[in-house]
Image: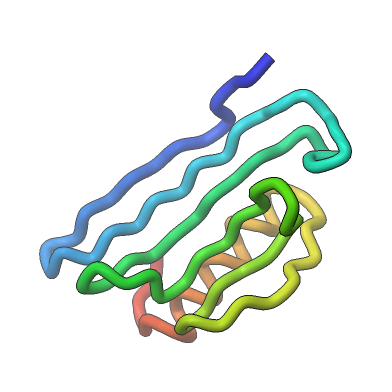
Length: 94
């Protein structure tokens, strides 16, 4: 069964968009932890920071157009790491 664990969307006064969606899904080869997620910070229509684990790519993050493997441990650390990268690459605290 698919169930939303956490969802938050914020549109800032300057138009920046922050969205964090974490969903519980059945464990599978693509989602062994039973979690699917997408966390993104968008500025002027472009993704500045993003974390996701869609099928076939596994856990990874995007920063300023570059993609790197992300070592997922748990949901709390995922959100913390996303917030840290937003502070580094955007200069904003969430």
